Amino acid sequence: MGLFNFRKTPDNSSNNENNTQQTSLLRTKGFEYLNNKEIYLDSACQSLRPQPVINSLVEYYQKHNSCGERVKYQWGKITDQKVSETRDHILKFLKLKKKDYFVSFTLNTTYGLNLLLSQFDFKKASIKTIVTSDIEHNSVFLTTLQASQNNKLERLVLSREIDGSLPISEIPDNSLVVVNVMSNIDGRLLQNLQEVVHYVHQKQGYIILDAAQVIAHHSAILEQTEADAICFSAHKLYAPSLGVMVIRKDFLSYIKPTFLGGGMVDDVDKSTYLPSFEHPDKFHTAFEPGLQAWGEIIALNSALDWLDQLPAAAKDRLSSCSEKLYQFLSTHPKIHCLNQHPSTVLTFYLKDIDSHLLAEALSDQGIMVRSGYFCVHYYLDHKLKLPPLLRLSLGYQNTEAEIDRVIKILSKF
Image (cartoon, rainbow, N blue to C red):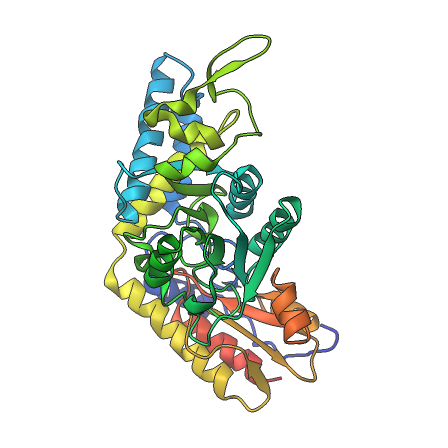
């Protein structure tokens, strides 16, 4: 294996079968298909998909593969109904009212943020400053940087508190605030989310939330928020690859669509067009040019159903696994752990071992982790000046036996 060598135990087929059966019983229902010799710890990038979600996607392709919002035949009617149910379920999941918000689908969180910031009418909204924070993913950091340059606006990068809170008093009047609700480095939550939203609106500003990391395991913090837009990725929510945008209806008045295509108009001639997104029931089309990922949208609804039915034991197990891994990483004398508290996202480095080599060594042991700067280059590389790191991000598929194995192997270093 190169730099790292481990003694491998003799293969025992009978014991392996028994271990597989036992581990399968301890997994959250839906992940029985997993190979128990491999441990997936990269859920912050994309979660694994439970079997009902996979089945839902296959069912679309096999039973009603059709274009949504375009056709009159029966397959299309089924697709339209199921897509509409997904939109409604997302709002219900976040406890937001349909009269106030609408849901659009796109590629991913990054794409959604780009659509919003590149089409936002800063002048009409009287925005003077763009505000973000130091622990942002590049999807926020770069889009706010570009928006400030393109619109010749001041851009303010605030330092988040240790608990993830944003210093409210430092937010200027008439600001567009774009921040994450949970860090993809150490799981810090925007603890004062509701206060921030209220303050920004009180000061004639607007707020867009990057909810990519928070949506799967801590979505309760988003419930009934009055943010102007929330962007997240379905593929971090145990669903297929898909981007989701939840937007206040009155916020659409500040959007000047420049990315246009089929599905967005009621009529068109040589010199003009009639936008369908002027109708309240079609607001979502403002961000949905062209054919959408209908099967993935429908499978997202299955993921939400699966999460709604998730037993308390599964949530307790994830919490226990996170706690156990945090205790090991934060107390080991040779490990530098960035986390200040347990989380499903844990980041660390070893002073004398290259993180990329360590990731490869763990891979040889069937343990899948992320190494590098996790698209947070400004904060980790330039502000903290840290070497490349390792990130372990857990999901509902993980078991305590897997975490014990990870700790055992890391201890050998």
